[in-house]
Length: 71
Image 1 (spheres, rainbow, N blue to C red):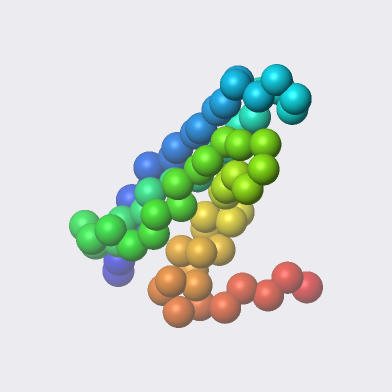
Image 2: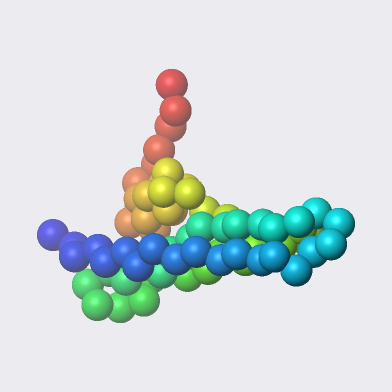
């Protein structure tokens, strides 16, 4: 069985005078000690990246070759 380690990350920005503060979530994932997924968050008004827990788990399952279908 694979050992999956998830380091949860956050990013925040308070610099934008137009949009105000922003917040993003993400994770670094390693499987059996090897880096597998870098889902680094980037808080930004435009073009930011955020991955909630469901996104992270779905990407881990896809990385392991599983398909997730919502019904």
